[in-house]
Amino acid sequence: MNKKMNILMFSGEYDKALAALILANSAKEMNIEVTMFFAFWGLLLVRDPKKMSEEDKSTYEKIFANMTPKNIEDLPLSKMNLAGLGKKMLLEMMEENHAPSLTDFLNGAIHKGIKMQACKLSCDIMGFNENELIEEVEVVTANEYLKDAINSDIQLFI
Amino acid sequence: MNKKMNILMFSGEYDKALAALILANSAKEMNIEVTMFFAFWGLLLVRDPKKMSEEDKSTYEKIFANMTPKNIEDLPLSKMNLAGLGKKMLLEMMEENHAPSLTDFLNGAIHKGIKMQACKLSCDIMGFNENELIEEVEVVTANEYLKDAINSDIQLFI
Amino acid sequence: MNKKMNILMFSGEYDKALAALILANSAKEMNIEVTMFFAFWGLLLVRDPKKMSEEDKSTYEKIFANMTPKNIEDLPLSKMNLAGLGKKMLLEMMEENHAPSLTDFLNGAIHKGIKMQACKLSCDIMGFNENELIEEVEVVTANEYLKDAINSDIQLFI
Image (cartoon, rainbow over all chains, first blue to last red):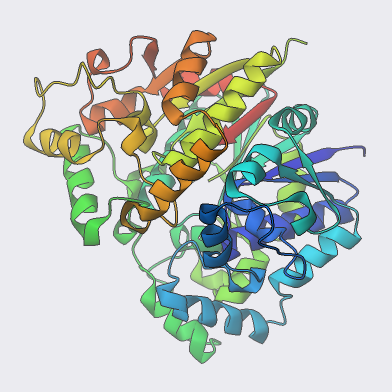
């Protein structure tokens, strides 16, 4: 088939990340090559909670690192979050249907060999160092994103 | 022309739905083949208010079905909703310009034969049964979405 | 290379606009032809603060024009805006990294000759007259958008 999909993951919300990772995993299972490029809030999906550090961070970067959810399961919904209540309800409904969690889908994507990239400029601004990210994620520029996306059959901004 | 557009409708907001349906209708009038795939909050656009039922629903699914707008005209704006005030203002401004309502655009899309699909996994999680949806909507998996999208000339995630 | 990218800018938020304009500028520098189509809230990016006028506006249109930010630097974040506090923090972090501002990126896009289009229907509804927009922006219909997008190698809805 030799087809290719590129997802620019801008959002850091639980439901949008779920949608992106379901598509990415499904595509990979259909032998579609997949690249995910994490930028801005999307970076919150690829920090490794075991490797976060305050080293080399400015005061603002420290505050920012601390006020954002360290665990991807704690990301809010894009709507109807209702101070966590709507989120809790969605999780219960997912469990009732034996749907995998966001963490499962992220790990699945990594194990399936989906290409994971983080936006260099976003990392710089938010003060995330490459060694704080999941090992499989490569930090690249917007140019690298564009080269990949322009040669893809599907491009989505999520 | 034989071109094709695929819209993944993730959002359940009035303004984004309006944008998606205006594009879908315009494209169809230009002889572009159009598929709309409704997932997550996007499903709120394709429930049939006359067919909603509490049958086969868990407690969470009943609460969820009841707290979400039954009529698409009641969907909120993605911003400046201002507890309904911003929305009311937008509707007044649309009326001043004789712009059709969201319902008009949705009916137009159905009558023009735009292909309407609902995401199976989203339906399962949210507890929407196929017979609660608009008749013209077919429930399909993410795989079906990907097959359609990969053969399209435009793919948008809205 | 002769490649083409089309961005539909729907959102009027600072961070999403930044992402869109960084991609647009980077693409143009790689000799990818770029069109940006501003619709709905995206129109807030292409009003010219020196040319805004109350002429020919209905009451609602006047209120709307006045309650939306006149300067693009005043646009809110899509999340963590925290009544402006999160936004201020992001701007400080951008400054620490000597990142250009949104205004810089918008001017860069204009100077590089990126094609700028505004959605006619959105302008009509929101009551923005063509002569209130930045000079380089052309008002076109959804049909014009679709013709451009269908012949592009990347289409994004931001």
